[in-house]
Image 1 (cartoon, rainbow, N blue to C red):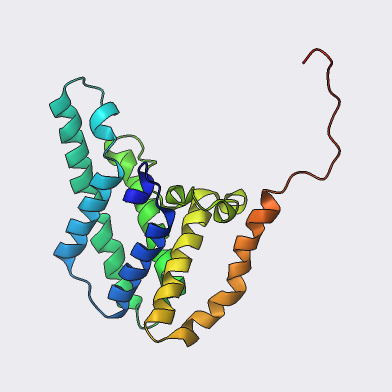
Image 2: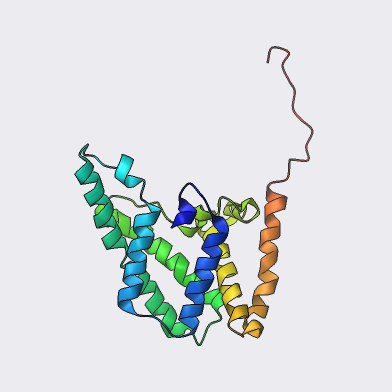
Length: 199
């Protein structure tokens, strides 16, 4: 959640995702802790709502909106982690984690239509603004591709740390996707256009 706030600690998201992946790999997936973690993630990530997002001007209404959205969207964590726990022994984490995390982002986005018309916040890709080379892949798949790449990085760390580096080997050919970043952000090769003496 702190990666979305002012500190913008992008590497913290990779460490957090790797930790979640290692817990999944170890078979630890309890509904209540997953829900509590999901609620804390939601409340931390959108804390700014208590100051500016409400159709009402009362402070209490802003806080209650923030709390209700946290309680509602916190349910996504046990859902996607439950799916992950079912597939943890069949899929490597470098692939499983980005699939379930992107699914969670999409559920949050679509679930927002039910209560607020939209909920475009907290997709993992938005937390990667400090990693510009990884963000350039948004050209190819939007914020979802950026989040998928970040979760793949966390899953690869988990595969290597959890004594399964051989499962991480197939991810190696995918890492050149981060090389698209410098290519995508390079200045254009065409000569500059005409200039005006009045500017």
